[in-house]
Length: 340
Ligand SMILES: Nc1ncnc2c1ncn2[C@@H]1O[C@H](COP(=O)(O)OP(=O)(O)OP(=O)(O)O)[C@@H](O)[C@H]1O
Image 1 (cartoon, helix red, strand yellow):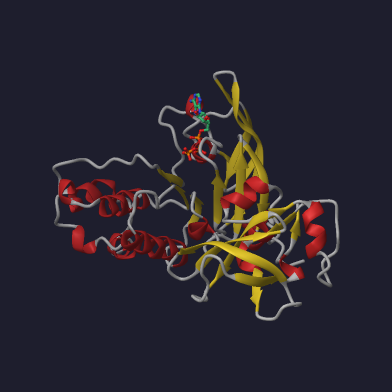
Image 2 (cartoon, helix red, strand yellow):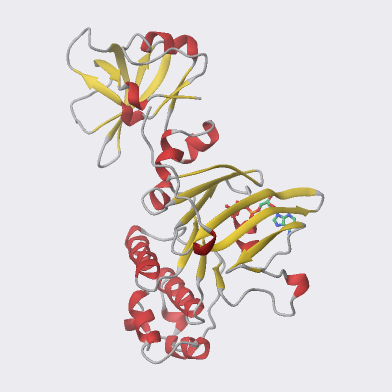
């Protein structure tokens, strides 16, 4: 099996956020169930999960915008009060960038930001640089693109000087150019402004390379927590596996043929193999024969669908030599197999 780095131990002194036993019931059903985790200062946590799994509600609960039915959120060792305990919901140290952020219309960007500014001289200008919005300051808010509006909404939140930034699907609805700008902004918010972040995203490309730790949610529960490598290579179930990319699932009966490969032990469980873990080998006898049924081009790689052991298996390759109908020989590295 793969060697993966265990998540870092969180020590009390470094802990910024402590979420303990959060439950939330709405309209008779559980939206959040027994959620507990902690976050160190500057630790980057991503939350993944299907639509409706409770990700946004969890972030809103952390921000003090939703009252949990039970459990508590502690931020910098103090309990975060919910909206039923506060006249103005929220916590001054925590900001939440919603998917439905709003900006006042018919104002110049610099006016909008001026009203929100609680930072010292020079700090706001630095923040505008980090958010890549300095050139937008003289523009009017109704003359901005969606990506620009979002970076201004983000800067406006950060002008209050928070320690924790909660980002709810910030990359949805962005084209590749604006997405890459926002990725650089989020990296700099963490590195130069030293603000701790939690980020929700559907897209594994947004979270795997960024996060120190990923929480996977399903039906209001955290079902897996680990480093990006653990989550990707050792998913607890097919739900987690599917959130982070394509996979092949071979039933144990079929897997027996592949287990002839020295190094792969036969187990009763199904075998999960990512498409990039198959190797296409040249010689007969060094791999199993498979017939190419379909070739799809994805820019940096091709995805082959091949018939193997009566199943359709997905194989990723950078080579452009394969066509429908070809017979290829494939093998798998024992290190890349995960039993599920
Ligand atoms: N105030 C509420 N009353 C009733 N149901 C609610 C309330 N808030 C959330 N829910 C339900 O809880 C579930 C989780 O919603 P939530 O928006 O947190 O999920 P999500 O994982 O963020 O989904 P998405 O990715 O679509 O934003 C949904 O089924 C939602 O309808």
